[in-house]
Length: 210
Image 1 (cartoon, rainbow, N blue to C red):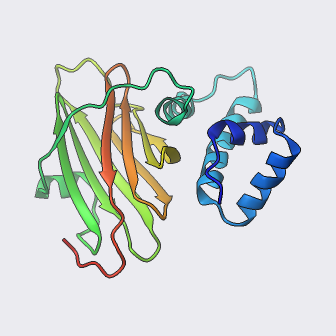
Image 2 (image 1 turned 30 degrees about the horizontal axis):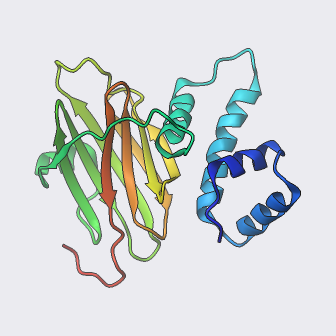
Image 3 (image 1 turned 180 degrees about the vertical axis):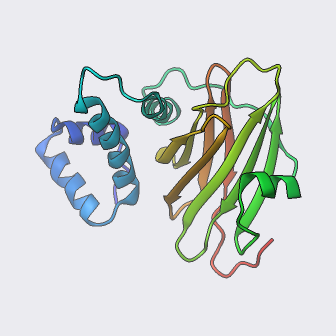
C-alpha cells in the first residue's frame, strides 16, 4: 500500500488530482489502506463542517484539530512547535482514579508524566489482537501557567501521518482512539507553548504484561 502525502489526499477530495492518482488512491482504499482512510475521513469532516453553511463559523474544536494535524505532520508546515520535556513519574492510584474507571488489564497502562508547569495522566489500552489504541487522558497545569487546558488538540500519529484527533474538554480530559499496525505517538499541542510527545510501542502478540 502507498504511503500517500497529505497533499495528494487533499487534491483527491477536491477532485483536483490527476486521473492516474485518483485511480491509484481508489484502489489503495479498496485494498484497506487504513492510514489513507483515516486522513480522508478527518479532512472530509472538516470540509463538511465548513461547507454546511458559510454564514456560520466552524466549531473552534474542529479548526484546532485540523490546524494541529497540519502543523505537526505536513511537510509544508513552517511552524512546528518545540517539544516539551516530560518526565515519567510512573503509575499511581490517583492517576487510575482520575483518568479512567477501567481496571488494569493485559496491555493496559496507567501513566503519569510531568513537565514544566503541567501534568499528563494517561490510561492506555493497546490490545494485541485488534491493535486498537485507546487513550483516555487528562491534562492539568499549574495555576501560574497562562494557557488554558480547554480545547487543547491531542493526536495519534504513526509515521508522520495523523490517525485520529480530538481536543480536551474544559477539565483537560480527552479520549482518542484509532487502529494501527505500527507503533504510534501521542502528540498534544499546547498553543503558544509547544508539543508534548509520548511514544507508544505496540505489544507483540503473546507478550506478558509488564
